Structure formats: structure tokens, C-alpha cells
Amino acid sequence: MTPTAKPKRQFARMPKAEATLGSAAPQTPPKAAACDSASLAPNPASKAMRITLLMQRPEGASLDEMVAETSWLPHTVRAALTGLRKKGHKIAKSKVDEVTRYTIAPASLS
Image 1: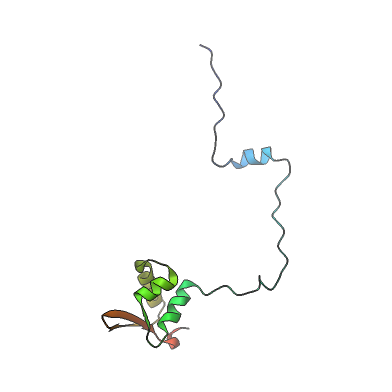
Image 2: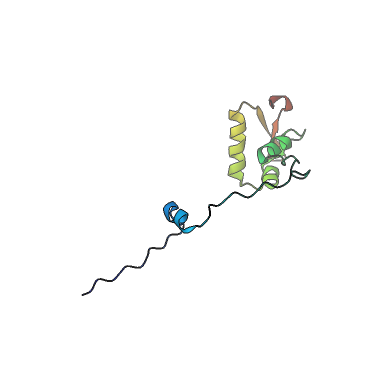
């Protein structure tokens, strides 16, 4: 029997040693885009901030409203409420027409 050469092994991502050997010129990062007014615009409010804004309304917010606003699952919204409680926010619960509504005092946001 004659030994046969094994085919070269394929990688999903090339190891760094082979990647640097195979390239002729080092990769340079792309240049930053020119600064314009669109890039200076503030980011939209975070989903957690949107939840607190909903709960600051006089009528508060139901779980369904918070789920619709954030597109999170209900258990994720409840976890966010727990996170707010752990940060020291006072969250009040009340039932209105068999629907639980959550409110938070604007003064508790520091």
C-alpha cells in the first residue's frame, strides 16, 4: 500500500496564522464617515426607559401594554420590573377592571 496524502482540513474561519500568511497586505479598518447632523441625533429611548415612561402615566401600564411597546415576551417584562425594583424604584400594583396595572412615581427615578 502506498500512503496517500490527506486532503487539507476545511475551517469555518481560517486560523490567524494562515490568515496572515495568505494575505498580501494587512487589512486596514474603514475610514470613519464624515460627521453630519444625522449621526449626532440622540438614540431612541431604551426599552427599559419606555417601560418606566408608560408606568409614569396617571393610569399606569398593564403588562399587555408594556409587551406591545417593547415587543418583549411577558416574562421578560416582568424581569425588567424586578430589575427596576432592585435598583430602588417603588413600583405599585393595582387592579382595574380585572387587569393589573403597574405605576411608578416620577420622583423615584433618579
